[in-house]
Image 1 (cartoon, helix red, strand yellow):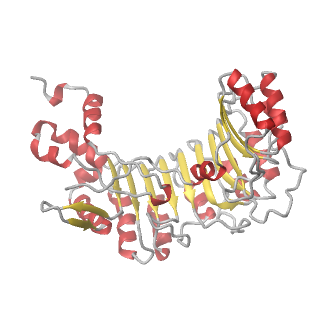
Image 2 (cartoon, rainbow, N blue to C red):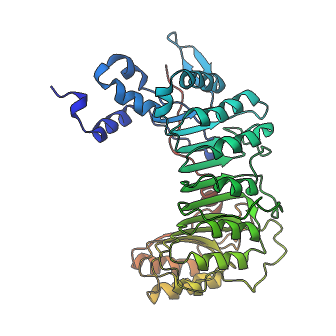
Image 3 (cartoon, rainbow, N blue to C red):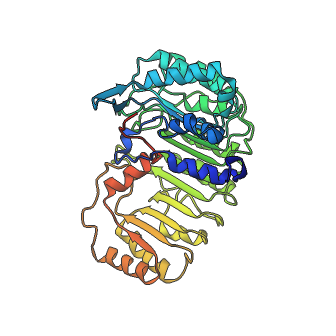
Length: 417
């Protein structure tokens, strides 16, 4: 007989991963945080595997969404997300051993008025001493200072913050400001990944007070995603300056950010592997200034993935991207013609995927040219197929939604308890 103690931990981990129910929601705007299922019976029945199942159950916790189940008689029963969060809070508060198991915590609220739930979320940060990955969707507006203070004391590697609440589509939630986040980064020396949606999208950047103190470098910081709000030129410079090892950058930029972005990319040319620079122009009638574009004018030897729109970049700058593998480009007919020539000349030898659409903005609801399969696109498709490059000229609305709303892919649906 083989006992659990004799099996390698990774095999046991894989077994229990299969015991978890996996769910996928097609509507990313309805992201939900639900606790894991199908592991609880093993905690009670299989004594030899109890420790392994418990570690798997509590190492990655998702709480906040309401859940519909059926009782033993088949009747539907709603389990309130706040109630489940409260039970978990009581458990870790009374049991430091279980609290020490928690490594990832994904929590959220469904109501802006639920102060008590936000208080529990903030206290959980301090109770779970070994927490490394924290994600929060929605916070009571009166508790943002408490949230910042709690996060500053944590030893996080990954931080995700969003003003949008779980499953509500609420657009008026409150979250930390960009300046708050910059100050917070100074207190999280081991943070590697920052993902933030801090404020509802506006037609132009919102000026903020500068950080309270001079910013020191954050050598561990490798991935920065800030969608909503649109960043100012100064804010872009701050983020680029503090991240000397930056590998992934995804931001929304406005009209006057070209020079700051150009300077920042030049400084990070040797490390940056992924760039998503989403040009936001809600007014549409005011042209972007031309003196700071294109933003790439020197070799970026490590860049593998690029999502960008004209005039931030045009195809002539592709010569500086020798290792580019994935290109998502928004531009004009003339740019598609240039891309045909560039691909034929072998300027992008590692290119394996390209998406091209006729638009000079990355905003999903902008005006689009309707004729997606004209002769220019057909020629671009042909040269890609000849070189085994995957080509896509899909519906812009669907494609852009993927940029703005990226779900975890692991959510839970209704089931019996």
